[in-house]
Image (cartoon, rainbow, N blue to C red; front, side):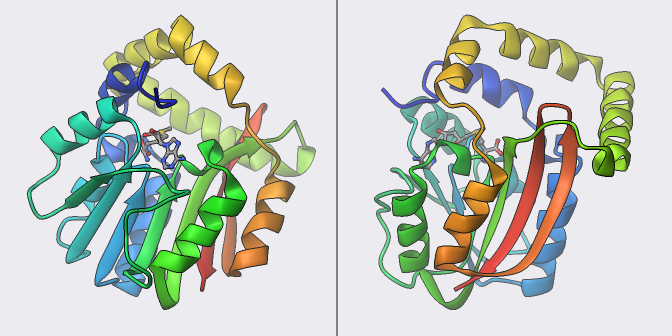
Length: 224
Ligand SMILES: C[S@@+](CC[C@H](N)C(=O)[O-])C[C@H]1O[C@@H](n2cnc3c(N)ncnc32)[C@H](O)[C@@H]1O
């Protein structure tokens, strides 16, 4: 059984719209619009909401998802132009040098970083880009106060505008399956991720997209 099988349906129902990713989505969209990749792979695509939003920006869109439950949800949601495959980042069913861009949005944390990064390098064309956005461990730091405030304000605004989302999110995060899954895959250190990424890629941009009291969301733009 894959990690996300027990939580896939509830997770996919909560995050059904990419604009809920208030800090992550604008940064990713800007990069995709700027670099205009011909071929783009979404690694650990979940319900496919990112690729749906990128229709019209990237002509050739590919998705990889290991969980069969999530895969079925993505298959039902994505348009027929998207090539959806089942598999893991550590052993991708794609030829060498297939893509101009690979994106991992909140899926990297579940991967074996060494093998996954080797594979991402392999499937990227020379000069291709890897966009990594994920949650990492972190504790309170006064330097990030403005980030905590921005995250708090965004959460309040979402709460006011979309109560249903909050109710669904609360149900998900309180469910025993979610708690078990998160407990078995705790957030890893940002410094560890940076070191792993820098062993394989040139990091052209790094951002702290948002910060909370128990973790940070960071974005890396990396070039092969
Ligand atoms: C938090 S969800 C994120 C899904 C989607 N990218 C999003 O932003 O909603 C994590 C996803 O990573 C996938 N995943 C877990 N392990 C993986 C692996 N080894 N390789 C690729 N994807 C993986 C899960 O099945 C799940 O769909």
